[in-house]
Image (cartoon, rainbow, N blue to C red; front, side):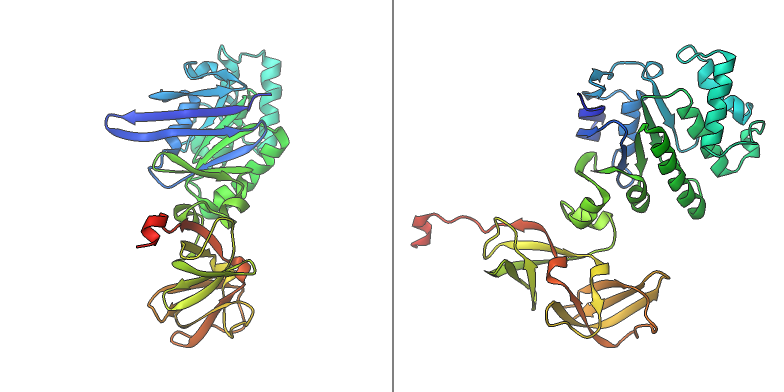
Length: 369
């Protein structure tokens, strides 16, 4: 059985500017895939290529094994919700949701129109708001109307382009839960574009990260957060501590890495050898502040800032080499005091090797000189 949605080697250029550079990814039927990246990474352009709103410079798009690259948007059976919702201001909520069922592509008789629209109103929690116009609805209600309109004709795939960006934080979080609930209920294949890392991790089955028009990594939220492919992914998915050092020895499955004036112990990975330069990552929630643990990595430093965030205490600690490390700990009974000497410590297994630069190979002749 072919992959439900396949984007193959898509490129989009505007003159000398490249918006998408050989982008490829796949989405299985019924999955909710999030396209995540910073502003200007090509997320919305990619979604518009899938929808048929933008013609790619090269590459192909397939749905259920059928090449739809040159198929007009109205013939693709795709539901689309844009950031601005694009509701018809002169129509009621009911009329907006029913609109696709009155077009030639999805025309239904009056009885089926009524049944489908009522089902969507029940699913999206809009019951009782049928006769209101968009100007009489809140932002969250308008978003639900746009979502209901995109789903009412049973599309093959639902495309969401930053649909929650205009909502306040509390409403946005509530709508994230609603989208997950609707997705589980209908089983519709969804591609959801966002620049919000937390939103992506909350709603996605799978996340595809774009940077400068290229796919840099695809995986589950856990895979991307705990095992990022490079420094960009590590930083983009949340706060992190990154350092570069040299492997000085390997013993019993543990790398000993010299980082400035400190030595760290790191789980060994295949292919690494002595004198390899490595980039290491330790997430702030893995780092503890206080008395060092003899069985863990430990670094002395001075507290330069400590902030209470409700769910965590964020503490920045300056080391003797001037670098600043961050720790996020569960709130304790007292605040850490700025200027106090302390230690950072974390388990050996909580360090990740992000990149390794092997030493240059030396020929036997060179080695003898």
